Image 1 (tube, rainbow, N blue to C red):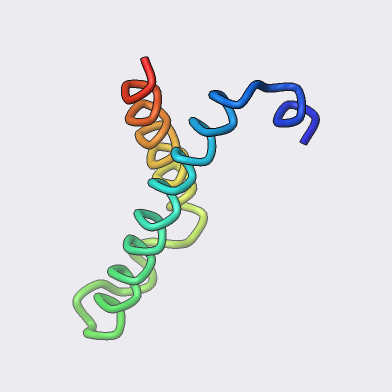
Image 2: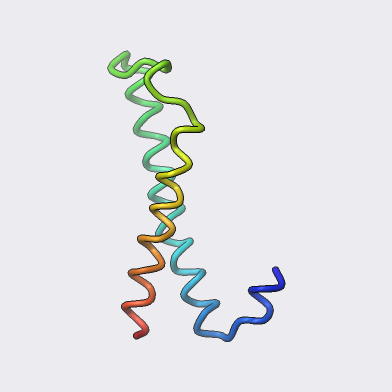
Length: 72
């Protein structure tokens, strides 16, 4: 929170847009894996929620790159 309060308006907008990209991608990944598990295509032993954290970080970095390129 202190970092966000200390940042300027452009950095706040970049952070918000990065989250606006990362959140729907993360939800889509979770929904897809849940549906594949329900359809018995993927078993729950093949993946766990702890394995997905790296993808969430990747989605955030991806969103941040998109937002920074927009305002650069």
